[in-house]
Length: 384
Image (cartoon, rainbow, N blue to C red; front, side):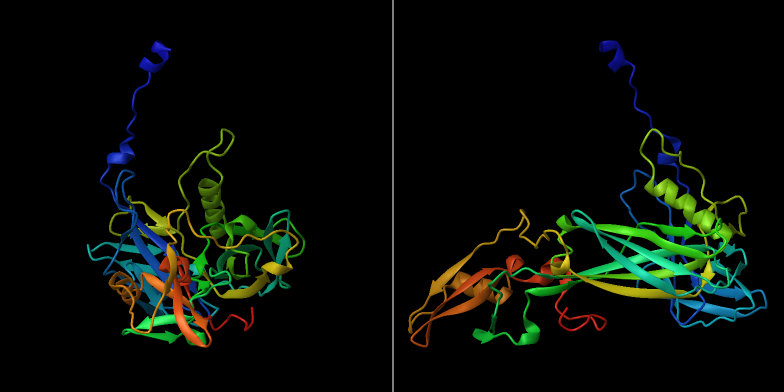
């Protein structure tokens, strides 16, 4: 044992201490009605405390092989650049041209503008204790062949049980909450999955994708307690773009085991004009986007669904306070009601007169404190 442990030496790979910072280009050129978002970032060292080094102040333009130019504007989000509703002609190829604030120039190769066929169906298949989602599509012209999908999820949840907060303390007064100010039911802010979903029909006689897997939602995540929403976006790819996403999927989602493939250099169609030896990370595609949104109600599932519960780290203190005509709330309670740290739930009455109130701490009664909003999204069906 002494010999075995004495032979162990710490290894600090050179990549940890390198000062090189490479440009990362994330996004695709949406050639249809939807907006095009391009994110520019810089790589950081493995031991860096930074998780995201945004490239700000850049100038980005989309160029066609017939000299059309479409500029992007920087948004208020660091490293994000935007252009809306391009509706690009389909008889041209396009590329991205980037000029950074440190006087470096980057370009992508000219890429074919792919027209994405519609999504046929998005399936939600109940399994033992969760739901598997999948997607089907086809192209009657047999021209697409290579596909990518991304998935954005959201869900409705209720944290109140049988005791939602029906009262509000405002300017020293206790008022009933209006129906649109109830805070027990929320809609989760939409979240884009980080997983990579791709498919191809290259070996088939017909350009058909049947039930390509999109992801699995376990009931224990509590996302299925009420209504779950999945928005699927579909992109047509070139063969080279498919190779890029396939390699990225392999190296990011299938590593860690002895038999898994080893990491390898990524494919890219981006180049640094200022310094041709400098690597650039990313791949620029051009296509229209098609989409389909599906809703799933938890009560229709053939297994037990789990309801939101109070996290162990949250103290759900609360209680009741009885009042007399001449009494007022204690100072401490008035302060917590005014600050919103404590919320009134309901009133106790006797012979039609209010004799007291019960209350709970805000994390146990306000669903907005768990990453949601009480405003029903415009795309969310009423009653779901």
